[in-house]
Length: 339
Image 1 (cartoon, helix red, strand yellow):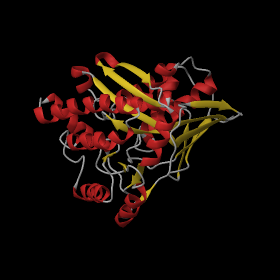
Image 2: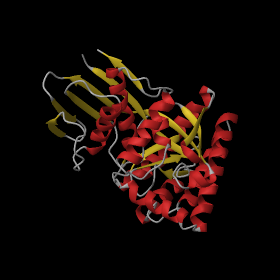
Image 3: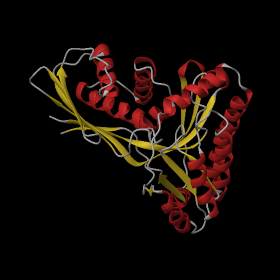
Image 4: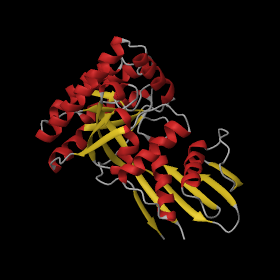
Protein backbone atom coordinates (compact mmCIF):
# COMPACT_ATOMS: atom_id res chain seq x y z
CA UNK A 1 0.00 0.00 0.00
CA UNK A 2 1.04 3.58 -0.67
CA UNK A 3 -0.52 6.47 1.23
CA UNK A 4 -0.38 9.70 -0.75
CA UNK A 5 -1.16 13.34 -0.12
CA UNK A 6 -0.82 16.72 -1.76
CA UNK A 7 -1.54 20.28 -0.67
CA UNK A 8 -1.35 23.54 -2.64
CA UNK A 9 1.06 26.41 -2.18
CA UNK A 10 -0.41 29.87 -1.73
CA UNK A 11 -0.18 33.46 -2.89
CA UNK A 12 -0.44 35.89 0.00
CA UNK A 13 -2.41 38.76 -1.51
CA UNK A 14 -2.84 41.05 1.49
CA UNK A 15 -2.19 41.37 5.20
CA UNK A 16 1.04 39.36 5.24
CA UNK A 17 2.82 39.47 8.59
CA UNK A 18 -0.23 40.27 10.71
CA UNK A 19 -0.64 36.53 11.42
CA UNK A 20 2.66 36.51 13.32
CA UNK A 21 2.72 36.56 17.12
CA UNK A 22 2.91 38.82 19.12
CA UNK A 23 1.15 41.22 16.71
CA UNK A 24 -1.80 38.87 16.15
CA UNK A 25 -2.09 38.30 19.92
CA UNK A 26 -2.05 41.99 20.78
CA UNK A 27 -4.02 43.53 17.91
CA UNK A 28 -5.58 40.70 15.90
CA UNK A 29 -4.42 39.87 12.39
CA UNK A 30 -6.15 39.60 9.02
CA UNK A 31 -4.85 38.03 5.82
CA UNK A 32 -6.25 37.29 2.38
CA UNK A 33 -4.59 34.49 0.44
CA UNK A 34 -5.34 32.15 -2.45
CA UNK A 35 -4.00 28.69 -3.22
CA UNK A 36 -2.50 27.93 -6.61
CA UNK A 37 -1.69 24.91 -8.79
CA UNK A 38 1.77 24.36 -7.34
CA UNK A 39 1.91 21.62 -4.74
CA UNK A 40 3.79 19.79 -2.03
CA UNK A 41 3.43 16.02 -2.35
CA UNK A 42 4.16 13.14 0.00
CA UNK A 43 3.94 9.35 -0.13
CA UNK A 44 4.37 6.82 2.69
CA UNK A 45 5.19 3.16 2.02
CA UNK A 46 5.19 0.93 5.13
CA UNK A 47 8.24 -1.36 5.40
CA UNK A 48 8.87 -4.74 7.00
CA UNK A 49 12.23 -3.58 8.36
CA UNK A 50 12.46 -1.19 11.31
CA UNK A 51 13.90 1.67 9.25
CA UNK A 52 12.82 5.14 8.18
CA UNK A 53 13.90 5.97 4.64
CA UNK A 54 13.64 9.57 3.49
CA UNK A 55 13.67 10.61 -0.16
CA UNK A 56 13.33 14.35 -0.75
CA UNK A 57 13.05 14.08 -4.52
CA UNK A 58 13.07 17.81 -5.32
CA UNK A 59 16.13 18.46 -3.12
CA UNK A 60 17.93 15.29 -4.27
CA UNK A 61 18.44 14.25 -0.63
CA UNK A 62 18.18 10.75 0.81
CA UNK A 63 18.58 9.53 4.36
CA UNK A 64 18.06 6.24 6.20
CA UNK A 65 17.86 5.85 9.96
CA UNK A 66 16.50 3.45 12.56
CA UNK A 67 12.79 3.76 13.34
CA UNK A 68 13.55 4.72 16.93
CA UNK A 69 11.56 7.78 17.96
CA UNK A 70 12.12 10.62 18.47
CA UNK A 71 14.44 10.93 15.50
CA UNK A 72 17.42 13.23 16.14
CA UNK A 73 17.10 16.79 14.86
CA UNK A 74 20.56 17.26 13.38
CA UNK A 75 20.01 19.59 10.43
CA UNK A 76 19.24 16.78 7.98
CA UNK A 77 15.61 16.93 6.78
CA UNK A 78 14.55 18.18 10.21
CA UNK A 79 11.20 19.47 8.99
CA UNK A 80 10.21 15.93 7.99
CA UNK A 81 11.58 14.49 11.23
CA UNK A 82 9.58 17.05 13.19
CA UNK A 83 6.32 15.75 11.72
CA UNK A 84 7.32 12.13 12.34
CA UNK A 85 8.32 12.80 15.94
CA UNK A 86 5.03 14.52 16.73
CA UNK A 87 2.96 11.76 15.09
CA UNK A 88 4.96 9.08 16.93
CA UNK A 89 4.51 10.92 20.23
CA UNK A 90 0.78 11.60 19.90
CA UNK A 91 -0.46 8.56 17.97
CA UNK A 92 2.32 5.99 17.59
CA UNK A 93 3.80 4.63 14.36
CA UNK A 94 3.39 0.87 13.91
CA UNK A 95 6.34 0.06 11.60
CA UNK A 96 9.19 1.38 9.56
CA UNK A 97 8.36 3.24 6.37
CA UNK A 98 9.68 5.12 3.36
CA UNK A 99 8.67 8.78 3.05
CA UNK A 100 9.00 10.41 -0.38
CA UNK A 101 8.38 14.15 -0.78
CA UNK A 102 8.41 16.69 -3.59
CA UNK A 103 7.62 20.43 -3.65
CA UNK A 104 6.93 22.34 -6.85
CA UNK A 105 8.77 25.49 -5.68
CA UNK A 106 12.14 25.98 -3.97
CA UNK A 107 12.41 26.41 -0.21
CA UNK A 108 12.60 30.04 0.82
CA UNK A 109 10.69 31.23 -2.24
CA UNK A 110 7.81 32.90 -0.39
CA UNK A 111 4.93 30.58 -1.33
CA UNK A 112 4.65 28.84 2.03
CA UNK A 113 6.61 25.77 0.94
CA UNK A 114 7.79 24.64 4.39
CA UNK A 115 4.39 24.85 6.07
CA UNK A 116 2.67 23.25 3.09
CA UNK A 117 5.16 20.39 3.22
CA UNK A 118 4.41 19.88 6.93
CA UNK A 119 0.67 19.77 6.19
CA UNK A 120 1.23 17.34 3.32
CA UNK A 121 3.37 14.91 5.32
CA UNK A 122 0.95 15.12 8.22
CA UNK A 123 -1.86 14.37 5.77
CA UNK A 124 -0.08 11.25 4.51
CA UNK A 125 0.24 10.00 8.09
CA UNK A 126 -3.41 10.80 8.74
CA UNK A 127 -4.31 8.69 5.69
CA UNK A 128 -2.12 5.79 6.82
CA UNK A 129 -3.01 5.79 10.50
CA UNK A 130 -6.62 6.99 10.08
CA UNK A 131 -6.01 9.93 12.40
CA UNK A 132 -9.14 11.81 13.53
CA UNK A 133 -8.02 15.25 12.33
CA UNK A 134 -10.42 17.83 10.88
CA UNK A 135 -9.21 20.79 8.85
CA UNK A 136 -8.69 23.12 11.81
CA UNK A 137 -7.02 20.30 13.78
CA UNK A 138 -4.65 19.52 10.91
CA UNK A 139 -3.64 23.14 10.37
CA UNK A 140 -3.15 23.79 14.09
CA UNK A 141 -1.06 20.65 14.57
CA UNK A 142 1.13 21.65 11.60
CA UNK A 143 1.58 25.06 13.23
CA UNK A 144 2.56 23.47 16.55
CA UNK A 145 5.13 21.24 14.84
CA UNK A 146 6.82 24.17 13.12
CA UNK A 147 6.60 26.88 15.72
CA UNK A 148 6.79 24.92 18.99
CA UNK A 149 8.50 21.61 18.24
CA UNK A 150 10.99 22.89 15.65
CA UNK A 151 11.22 26.45 17.04
CA UNK A 152 10.94 27.99 13.56
CA UNK A 153 9.84 31.62 13.45
CA UNK A 154 6.78 32.34 11.34
CA UNK A 155 3.08 32.98 11.16
CA UNK A 156 -0.08 30.92 10.94
CA UNK A 157 -1.55 31.56 7.50
CA UNK A 158 0.37 28.98 5.48
CA UNK A 159 -0.81 25.93 7.40
CA UNK A 160 -4.45 26.98 7.09
CA UNK A 161 -4.17 27.92 3.41
CA UNK A 162 -2.65 24.52 2.57
CA UNK A 163 -5.29 22.63 4.55
CA UNK A 164 -8.41 24.53 3.46
CA UNK A 165 -7.47 25.68 -0.06
CA UNK A 166 -9.27 28.30 -2.15
CA UNK A 167 -9.48 32.05 -1.58
CA UNK A 168 -9.79 32.81 2.11
CA UNK A 169 -10.00 35.81 4.39
CA UNK A 170 -8.36 34.67 7.62
CA UNK A 171 -8.55 36.25 11.05
CA UNK A 172 -6.02 35.62 13.82
CA UNK A 173 -6.52 36.32 17.50
CA UNK A 174 -4.86 35.76 20.87
CA UNK A 175 -4.74 32.20 22.15
CA UNK A 176 -4.15 30.61 18.72
CA UNK A 177 -7.72 31.38 17.65
CA UNK A 178 -8.03 31.32 13.86
CA UNK A 179 -11.16 31.87 11.76
CA UNK A 180 -11.04 30.89 8.07
CA UNK A 181 -13.66 32.66 5.95
CA UNK A 182 -13.90 31.15 2.43
CA UNK A 183 -14.79 33.82 -0.13
CA UNK A 184 -17.38 33.14 -2.82
CA UNK A 185 -15.84 35.06 -5.70
CA UNK A 186 -17.42 34.99 -9.14
CA UNK A 187 -15.49 32.90 -11.65
CA UNK A 188 -15.00 35.78 -14.07
CA UNK A 189 -13.34 37.87 -11.36
CA UNK A 190 -10.93 35.06 -10.53
CA UNK A 191 -10.20 34.47 -14.22
CA UNK A 192 -9.38 38.15 -14.65
CA UNK A 193 -7.19 38.19 -11.55
CA UNK A 194 -5.37 35.07 -12.74
CA UNK A 195 -4.84 36.61 -16.18
CA UNK A 196 -3.55 39.91 -14.81
CA UNK A 197 -1.45 38.70 -11.89
CA UNK A 198 2.09 37.81 -13.01
CA UNK A 199 4.02 35.46 -10.73
CA UNK A 200 7.76 36.08 -11.11
CA UNK A 201 10.56 34.06 -9.51
CA UNK A 202 13.61 36.21 -8.83
CA UNK A 203 15.85 33.11 -8.78
CA UNK A 204 16.89 34.02 -5.24
CA UNK A 205 15.80 32.61 -1.91
CA UNK A 206 16.00 33.87 1.64
CA UNK A 207 15.79 32.67 5.21
CA UNK A 208 12.38 34.01 6.20
CA UNK A 209 12.91 33.28 9.89
CA UNK A 210 15.49 36.05 10.28
CA UNK A 211 13.14 38.66 8.80
CA UNK A 212 10.21 37.40 10.85
CA UNK A 213 12.29 37.36 14.03
CA UNK A 214 13.13 41.03 13.55
CA UNK A 215 9.47 41.79 12.88
CA UNK A 216 8.55 40.06 16.14
CA UNK A 217 11.25 41.96 18.02
CA UNK A 218 9.96 45.26 16.65
CA UNK A 219 6.51 44.52 18.06
CA UNK A 220 7.96 43.40 21.40
CA UNK A 221 9.99 46.61 21.53
CA UNK A 222 6.89 48.65 20.60
CA UNK A 223 8.53 50.24 17.56
CA UNK A 224 5.75 52.44 16.28
CA UNK A 225 6.78 52.44 12.60
CA UNK A 226 6.68 48.65 12.41
CA UNK A 227 3.41 48.32 14.31
CA UNK A 228 1.77 51.06 12.26
CA UNK A 229 2.86 49.28 9.07
CA UNK A 230 1.14 46.09 10.27
CA UNK A 231 -2.03 48.05 11.04
CA UNK A 232 -2.03 49.26 7.44
CA UNK A 233 -1.50 45.73 6.13
CA UNK A 234 -4.49 44.51 8.12
CA UNK A 235 -6.46 47.33 6.51
CA UNK A 236 -5.13 46.18 3.14
CA UNK A 237 -6.61 42.70 3.68
CA UNK A 238 -10.08 44.21 4.11
CA UNK A 239 -9.58 46.35 0.99
CA UNK A 240 -8.54 43.28 -1.01
CA UNK A 241 -11.56 41.28 0.18
CA UNK A 242 -13.92 44.05 -0.90
CA UNK A 243 -12.28 44.39 -4.34
CA UNK A 244 -12.54 40.66 -5.03
CA UNK A 245 -16.12 40.28 -3.85
CA UNK A 246 -17.36 43.38 -5.68
CA UNK A 247 -15.36 42.65 -8.83
CA UNK A 248 -13.41 45.92 -8.82
CA UNK A 249 -10.41 43.90 -9.93
CA UNK A 250 -8.38 46.77 -11.36
CA UNK A 251 -8.18 48.29 -7.87
CA UNK A 252 -5.97 45.38 -6.89
CA UNK A 253 -2.79 46.87 -8.32
CA UNK A 254 -3.15 49.96 -6.17
CA UNK A 255 -4.04 47.81 -3.14
CA UNK A 256 -0.93 45.69 -3.66
CA UNK A 257 1.23 48.80 -4.00
CA UNK A 258 -0.28 50.27 -0.83
CA UNK A 259 0.66 47.11 1.05
CA UNK A 260 4.14 46.84 -0.44
CA UNK A 261 5.08 50.37 0.59
CA UNK A 262 3.97 49.74 4.17
CA UNK A 263 5.38 46.20 4.39
CA UNK A 264 8.91 47.53 3.84
CA UNK A 265 8.57 49.37 7.16
CA UNK A 266 7.93 46.18 9.15
CA UNK A 267 11.54 44.98 9.25
CA UNK A 268 14.91 45.48 7.59
CA UNK A 269 15.56 43.16 4.65
CA UNK A 270 12.01 42.77 3.36
CA UNK A 271 13.13 44.51 0.19
CA UNK A 272 16.51 45.53 -1.20
CA UNK A 273 17.89 47.51 -4.11
CA UNK A 274 17.70 44.57 -6.53
CA UNK A 275 14.08 43.80 -5.67
CA UNK A 276 13.20 47.50 -5.84
CA UNK A 277 14.74 47.66 -9.33
CA UNK A 278 12.57 44.73 -10.45
CA UNK A 279 9.50 46.35 -8.92
CA UNK A 280 10.18 49.70 -10.60
CA UNK A 281 10.79 48.07 -13.99
CA UNK A 282 7.48 46.21 -13.77
CA UNK A 283 5.63 49.44 -12.97
CA UNK A 284 7.28 51.30 -15.83
CA UNK A 285 6.13 48.51 -18.16
CA UNK A 286 2.51 48.84 -17.08
CA UNK A 287 2.02 47.05 -13.73
CA UNK A 288 0.01 49.15 -11.28
CA UNK A 289 1.36 47.40 -8.19
CA UNK A 290 2.83 44.26 -6.75
CA UNK A 291 4.56 42.74 -3.77
CA UNK A 292 7.22 40.35 -2.59
CA UNK A 293 5.64 37.03 -1.69
CA UNK A 294 6.01 35.77 1.85
CA UNK A 295 8.29 37.39 4.40
CA UNK A 296 10.33 39.17 1.75
CA UNK A 297 14.01 39.36 0.94
CA UNK A 298 13.79 37.30 -2.26
CA UNK A 299 11.87 34.44 -3.80
CA UNK A 300 8.69 35.15 -5.78
CA UNK A 301 7.15 38.51 -6.55
CA UNK A 302 3.69 39.20 -7.97
CA UNK A 303 2.61 42.09 -10.18
CA UNK A 304 -0.86 43.23 -11.17
CA UNK A 305 -0.97 44.07 -14.89
CA UNK A 306 -4.30 45.58 -16.04
CA UNK A 307 -5.78 45.27 -19.56
CA UNK A 308 -3.11 43.60 -21.72
CA UNK A 309 -0.01 45.01 -20.06
CA UNK A 310 1.15 41.61 -18.76
CA UNK A 311 3.07 40.96 -22.00
CA UNK A 312 5.12 44.15 -21.71
CA UNK A 313 5.71 43.48 -18.00
CA UNK A 314 6.87 39.91 -18.66
CA UNK A 315 9.23 41.23 -21.33
CA UNK A 316 10.64 43.85 -18.95
CA UNK A 317 11.18 41.25 -16.22
CA UNK A 318 13.20 39.03 -18.57
CA UNK A 319 16.17 41.39 -18.12
CA UNK A 320 16.61 40.44 -14.45
CA UNK A 321 17.53 36.76 -14.73
CA UNK A 322 14.42 35.26 -13.16
CA UNK A 323 11.42 33.69 -14.84
CA UNK A 324 7.65 33.94 -14.92
CA UNK A 325 5.77 30.96 -13.47
CA UNK A 326 2.40 29.98 -14.88
CA UNK A 327 -0.27 28.89 -12.39
CA UNK A 328 -4.02 28.57 -11.84
CA UNK A 329 -6.04 29.27 -8.72
CA UNK A 330 -7.30 26.12 -7.06
CA UNK A 331 -10.31 25.57 -4.80
CA UNK A 332 -8.96 22.42 -3.14
CA UNK A 333 -6.75 22.19 -0.08
CA UNK A 334 -5.13 19.05 1.34
CA UNK A 335 -6.10 15.82 -0.41
CA UNK A 336 -5.10 12.30 0.69
CA UNK A 337 -5.69 8.86 -0.82
CA UNK A 338 -4.53 5.24 -0.71
CA UNK A 339 -3.39 3.00 -3.57
